[in-house]
Image 1 (tube, rainbow, N blue to C red):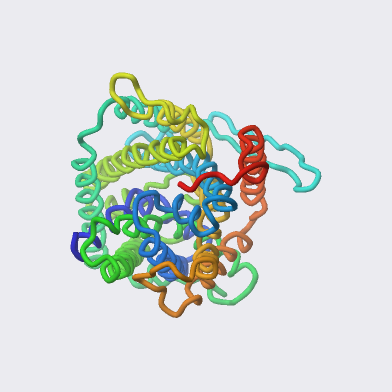
Image 2 (image 1 turned 90 degrees about the vertical axis):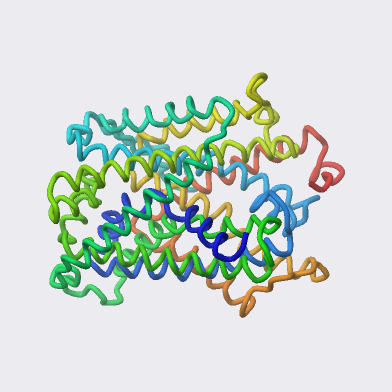
Length: 472
């Protein structure tokens, strides 16, 4: 692949259903059109962390992605084995949360056709008090839309429970559907632009207070979720021409182009729909189909119904491709001997990792009972702590440990981008309303993962209880 093809592929990975369902959440977090700052800050953070991935991908070529980066950065025979295990372990939670967020978003847009899907039948908050950490709270909600989201999870697993030969076609459908929808929104918004609505900033919108930074942290968390995928091109070094030049270029170009699309789309919608209406939808976890309302107010019901159908199709294609990709990660780690052996089993007839797929589908279905904002917050915090932070630190550790390794691409202004990425991730973790809630989840998952790793290592007499584990 050349630069153009690599950039297009990376944009496909970055843009899914996220920007269509999360805009009310970002506006609610910032409390006004200044929410655009969240998208800008998210793009800058993606650039910094993308340079981390680009250097590691050039220095540690081949398959495996973050799993291999963490293993090699921290030492595959010692700490790297633990940290790479924790990366796979957190995927057992963050991957189903990612899939569930897509299913919840799909059900949210389906509520435009059937408003009764937003009707709440029951809510429940369970709390487990941990002496050293405080209350560990989980809130569940049951709506008709919940049943739709769960049904989408199981239907996706059913479709994947066979040999897969159509993923390329589905990727093209996802790309065409998303780009057509975004293009339609931007053109429509520019034709009907109301600057009084777009720049209706509330009093004190840019006052640098604690509330401002808490709001920016919440908005940046959601924007980070929407930008994810920028690092995928770094895993394809063997398939890209002149990778030392084209990987960082494709990575930065895709982030720049996607950021422009996100900013334009959000600005155009803010110029038609009052931000207070969107903020109320984000706070109440209902009427999240903001793109449908946008088209309804400009063109009428026919356009709203059409754009809703486009979003639903792209949401399902995104859920399908995510489920397929994530189901293979625990399988690969199990084959490597660094995860539970059951995940290495393949279907006796169709030859795919059915245990991994079924486990992913069941856990994702359970997470569909969360509110969308809670699912996104939980998965972002878990992945920041157990993947992105340790990877950003790892690129520095790898330079110190292995200065002899050839580095065809070196991070620009090293180590500044890695340090800025670390600072940005920490800002998201600790500068939000009720940040302790998701942080406790991540710490419990971390401690549970370390405990499981140590028990398995002790039983197998591997590091740190025996001889160092073999590399790879």
